[in-house]
Image (cartoon, rainbow, N blue to C red; front, side, top):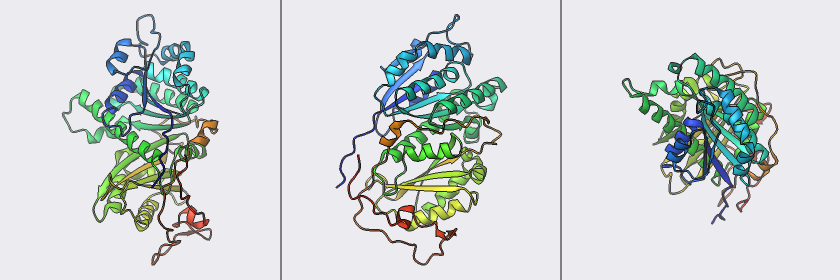
Length: 382
């Protein structure tokens, strides 16, 4: 039996109109409802979310921000103390924001700094405008994303334009945005489950922070679920087709990739090896690949969910350059280690009958904890 693990004190915050909308739409399918909060200039929008923890930003002379991020930044700065107080006591703050407008774009870097000053690890998920929203909103989004990268620990970007091909012709505009919100929300929920669930091969927030610090603070993410005898191969194929990864082009250019696998009790070491081999065949030869795995016996029997995060190359033309974010992380990160899943027996120390991948004399197909002869803990760490 695994010991119960107290959840990390976590606050999810929707910032601006799109952030509030995303957080509201996600409430229905979050695995474990975290503490929620919303930040906006419009009290009526905050009231419609039904979320009690809220900060109303002072509006500009004409009400709202008029699409000017400078107004949104000033408004958030005016209530900086209130923002810090709201986030006090939380180890992790997850920010959701849609960039391109005035409130979210201007306020979210201030909110991120307030969270860090309150001692929290800050994970931000930002959506970027569709191309049809015009060059000004796209330019505002680029500038705001750079400011957010400098303020948060980890930033995951979802360019809505990459989702456009999944939207059938004739889809009403409101449904298009609802679809984008659903994809983003479901991906974040899947990632969060992976980060906080007990694991055989842990992947946690410290891994994300290291990925961002070593390469770029901007990450792209995609998640797929497959089943059947070829579920591993199907997962690789679906990831390579995903517009969120630019149909594999982003993988081919990324300097670092982090992959988490969630499966049932039948998940095998050989499947993890096949997954790693399939991904290595499609990434740079010098790219780092980090693999994690968690087992949920009842929930995922017969199915696997593969969640992939890739460091965006700094020269990516679709995203801002020049700001690589913070390389340090707050002291709170030491508390964010993922618990290890109790194992009934030792696992083999190599893959029988398969030619290993050797780099610099090291068989990199064998997980690090096996190569270094490290035994996994038989109790869950808190």
